[in-house]
Length: 538
Image (tube, rainbow, N blue to C red; front, side):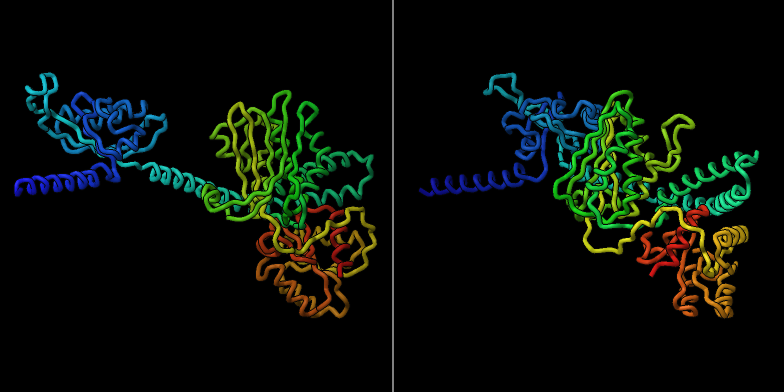
């Protein structure tokens, strides 16, 4: 009886050891495999079998090479098979494991070579004897999530680097545009004054007209640079972009040509956005021209809109994306597509794949600047031979913002009689501005420094109706000067001018309600219109 109890106790202890073995070995959070010198699996735990999507019983006898991705076989044989022939310290490597179902995962493999006594299987079981063999014990850890985190980190670092590079280029572009605009202002102003004094039959008239037209084209280029640099003042409106796009379809159809089919798929009940309609025109025109150039012969362009909500997971893929509701504008084509190198440089100013003289390289840079200025973001998906898709995410309108109506573009009457205080630190622009304003009938006081303008406002006994001032000047910026002058002349109207904006007279590039601004370089007609509107404003 005592012997039976001992036997039962031994069985219980054996069962407990079996359970402990199962918990510690089979249910371990990492996989264990034992590999023979011939490269066959001779033992494995349940975790390893689960990793490989196989029954544990079917693992035995399988070649380990079967479960290693072919492209990574060299890594395994270099790091793990070699130790079987030359006993050495444990070897560690990272490679991709191929599961039974054909999927893969990244694994960290640690191989340790040991010499163990194994039973020979060729004699009958009753005659089996132990033999000494070299075996490799593999420890397998699934590091797929870690690898994906590394990939995501590198992608975000690359996006951040690209974003910083674009910011630096933008600052450079904005500074260049500012200085260049001042020079263009002089060229345009004096050619207009000269043209007004010449008869159209004069031989110089045609030459001056060409100079004037070239200067205007150059001014358009600087405006594109300012758009890229996000230094362009904007007049946003709460709008349904479906209506604006619908009104542009005829123009866009003519723009891309008859051989390209334009398909428009608007979203029903589309959310509103706060956006400058003229900037939406720029975006669509540039993207459609880009699509047209990518299509050789017959093709199609699709424009669509949608309401989307970007969550934290989605935004983690983009360096400057913010969670929230967006209106998605998609423009896609079935053209030639682009490779990764082209996509990576796509929005840089002056980058173009077109032949010399066929493109400025500013179209997509302008799109990028406009989208970022409006707190949106842009994604590009392209594949060689399969076309390109631009996805533009514009924040959903939440709060009301000041809406600035477009000014009447009709030719203004030249009947100025008011008094204007003109402030500009560039002598040639100050002189030219005075000539242009006086030619429109206005009485003009000039000052090349803010302090001089303040003294004129204090000393002049009559009425000064309008302060027209540059934005960036020595001593004091235009906005501060306007506040000083208004403390002296409370009802004076103000008109700001600059070739470089956003940081001084505008908050985040958005003009305050009631603020009047003229972008350098400007024509006599534009000046007349802006001055008139500033004077009659309430």
